[in-house]
Structure formats: structure tokens, C-alpha cells
Amino acid sequence: MNLKLLTGGWLIFLLTGNLSGYSQADTAGAGGATRAGVDRVQWEADSGMIRRLADTIFTDGRAYDNLRTLTKKVGARLSGSSGYYKAERWGWQALEEAQADKVSMQECMVPHWVRGGKDTAHFYGAGISGGLDVIALGNSVGTGAKPLDAKVILIHNFDELEQRKDDVRGKIVFYNYPFNPLFVETFQAYGDAVRYRGAGASRAAKYGAVGVLVRSMSEGVDNAPHTGALIYTDSLQKIPAAAVGCRDADRLAALLEGHADLSVSLWTHGQMLPDTLAHNVIGELRGSVLPDQYITVGGHLDSWDPAEGAMDDGAGCVQSIEVLRALRAIGYKPRHTIRVVLFANEENGGRGARKYAAAAKEAGEHHLLGLESDAGGFTPRGFSLSLSDDKLALIRPWVELLRPYGVYELEKGGGGSDTNPLQEAVGAVVGELRPDSQRYFDYHHARTDVLENVNKRELELGTVNMAALIYLVDKYGWNYAN
Image (cartoon, rainbow, N blue to C red; front, side, top):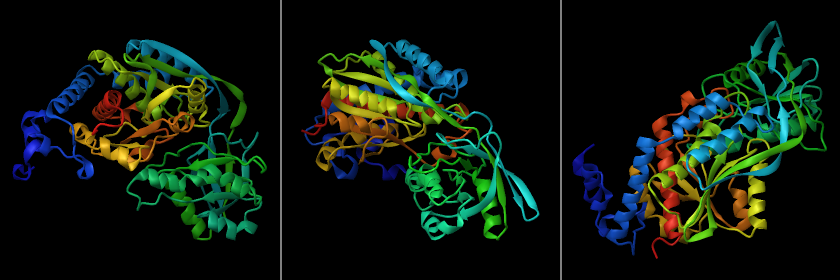
């Protein structure tokens, strides 16, 4: 790095590690927003408090060790499974060890889907044959006591499905819709492609298809298939559906585009059992000034069954617990009550989030913020928040307090599937930690989502920024520059 390019506060920070070297004129937030009305004493106090939070997370943190226990001793934890109930007990213990003032369980009824066995598939015909690495989509029906054997038809998108609707009856539709590489933010690519996983089965069934294969929701270069929930249209036949690993999807598509006349033998065993009882696990740090007003931070405790759920969303759970532990460890007394919520059933129903939001509404609770981490344990880049442009401008100076720990943007947006219901129910501002997204869909819903793919330092950096944002919101609300 060329020191000649560094001036003012940034040079002071690099030489001293202390943002308090800024003068008021030196500190400007993202997009040119200045910290008008924020004096040096206040700035130094906030910088120092965040540094203390960072110090305890870096030196005495429990996030990675908690994640090791969750992944290696609990493991997969799909709603309704024995693993999920084991995870509930783990969450209770972890929150107690973090010295929550109160730990509780909030009941909710959740879907209970079981995979039922090993999913298999192979193609054959035109003098060739080969295996396919597949995994049944969550909530899907199985093929029954024996494999489903049918001709396979390649469909690139829903427009083509409509054009070829007369050709799909009695066949297995293979949707080969890859991630669009032009989206730099990979969640945009996922949002574009996931409709084929979610709605593809019912749209194909409408025209008489007997099964569906979907290219995995990933642009990874391995061949691990990625599961995830589908949503059936009740008025249409429920047909088996499975995801195919990306390399096998390329191979199968190439053969079909070369006009090979192929069949697929697909054998899956999934079934939906009656709804069952589960719980959100909730820990509180009681507010000292406004105890009946709440800041929620959380992740979802459930995960898909093929792996350990380290990224999705063990990382968010342990980060949220660590926020509480760190605040307690430095002796911080929050003005508002801070709740850590380990949400139930995000993956195939969203019941835990809706229950938490409905209970908050019924109790007439005021929620200042609902923050979640559900985008992996990677290096933090920013936060999205459901604020107006005017409100966002007021807090943009916070970026300079967060920047030393990797966050450089507070952007207009919102939360995720576990906090958005809180906005709808009680009008809370909701937000989400936004880590670097490039590797997330290598692991998302796949057997590769294991502890070994989580970097301890990145996990801790995300936690530092979550704790810092919660501290700032607790202290100032949304009017920092006023």
C-alpha cells in the first residue's frame, strides 16, 4: 500500500489502530454523508466501545467453538427430526453459558418432511448410460416402492416449457437453468434461478409430466447436488422432484442437446408427515432503560439434512449468541432488551419466524430492530436495512466506525425470511448482515456445508459488526446525526 495515498484519519488509524485520531472534518460516511453533530468525545466513546467488543470476540470468543459443537455433535437438524430437538437443547445451553438473563422456548407447529432413504438416478438409452448425483427436493413426494422410469425432456426455462407443453406428458422434465454469471451479487443469481426449484414441479405437472429434475442452485464447480424446498400447487398432481449436481447437469444437457433419446430412472423416498411441535429458542439481555422495547438478533436453527448446516445457518446462530456474550462480557448494560432468537423451520415452512412476529404483535411489543445473519460466515461487507433514504443518511456515518472490521456499506433493503415478518407485524426496522457472497452457493443446501468450510476469523468479523450495529442502535436509535 502506498502511504502517500493515505491522508488524515486513515493514516492515523493505520499507524495507531485508533479511530479517535479523526478530527470532525476528517470523518465522512459512505456516499459523502458527514457525521454532522457528532462531537469528538462521542465518536471516541463509540469507537472505544466497539474496540472492546472486538477484543473480547477475537480473544475470548465462543462462536467457532459453539459452531463446532453444533455441527459435529448435533449435525443435520431438519424440522421435526431428532437432530432438531437436540439442537434446541444445544441452543438453550449455549445461551445460558453466554449469561443470558432469561432463556425460553416458544412453541410452534412445523412441517415434518422426511427423506426416507438414499436418492438415486441414472440415465440410459442410445447405447449409453451413466449415474447422476441427485438429491430429492425438500417437501417433495417420493417415487414409491420402485424407481420412476421415463423419457427425459430438456427444458431451459419456463417460456420453453409453455412452447413445448404438448411434448412433456409422461416424461421427466429436466430444467437446466444455470446461475446467471453476470450477477456479481450471487443472491441475485439465486433469486433468478430458484423459481425452477420452487415452482418447476407443479408447472411441469400441469402438462402431464411425471417427474422433475432441476439443475442445482449453485455455480460451484463440484458435483454435489443442492436440495431446498419446493412448493406444490395443491390443485395439481404432486410429482417427484430432485436436484442434479452441476457437472452431471452439464453432461446430461449436452447429451440431450445432441439429440440423444434418453430415459431416466429416478428413485426417491420423501414423504410429508403430520405437523409436529418445535420451538424458537430465545435468550434475553434485559434492558436497563426501556426493557419493554426490543432489539432482536438471530439466525435459524434448522438445516437441511445432507450436511451439518454450518453456513446455513449455524453461523448466524452462533454469531447471534456471541453478540449477547460479548455485550455481557464487557459489562455493557443495554437500554433496550436484546433478544437472541434461534428460529425454527426457516428452511421448509418459515413457521418459527411467523410465530415470533405474531406473538410480538399480540403482546403489543415495540421492536426497534430485527437483525439476522443468514448469508454464511464469510467476510462481512455491509448491512441491508429497511430504512427510508432520509433515515439511512442519518446513520451512514456509522460506516466509518465499522469499516476497520470489514463493513463498508449500509444499504437500503431489508431483512431476510426470519425478520421480515417482524416488520410486517409490528413495523420494526429489519436488516441483515451481508457477507461476501461469492462462495455461499458452493455450500448452500449441499453436503459440503460443513464446519471445515467456515473460516474462524471471518465468522468473528461478522460477529463484531453485528455487535457494533446493535450497540449503536441501542444507544442512538435511528437518529445518530440529529
